[in-house]
Image (cartoon, rainbow, N blue to C red; front, side):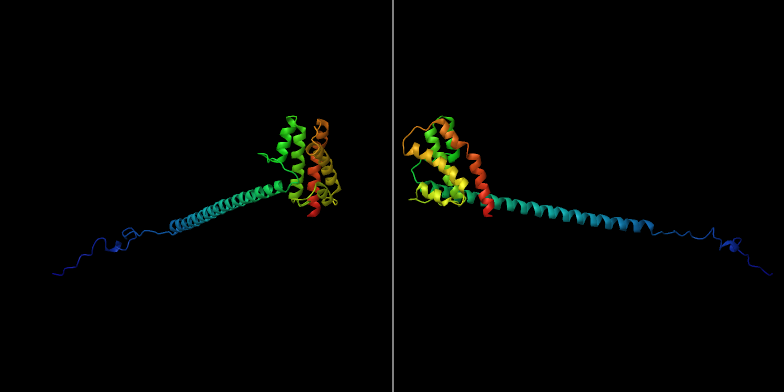
Length: 205
């Protein structure tokens, strides 16, 4: 007996696309997008870090400079105070050093009606300010007339100083009671005195 081998019923359909093992399609879109976003975030983080470090460095430098300026200012004040003591000692007359500056003391005495004392401090203030601006040189043994001669190139300042000086000498050396109107005539020239000081400084620069 001849036996014919039986063909599998679905042998012709083995290669059918319906029976193949499905393959998963891969696309590169999502990984690329994630990588790009990661780089952006990385650069953003680095940029923020750089900005923060720069800001920190700026704040440290600023604090250091402010401290240096403060120390320099303190030293200058100490030096200037020492120079003021020397200036007071170099005045051509003995005077009680006020708690504030000479101008404040002159104003206080003026408002209290003590014009003979006020003119002493007003004259002292003018001499010290002229010395500070290097327009005169205060020194022991010098006379008021010598200071006037040192101002010969500053006639306006010389005139103001001479006006105060004469009133001062009448009150201080002449022991005269200075009337209010005479002191006020000197006091009213203060604004002109300060303006002339500034003008002389600009001219010398």
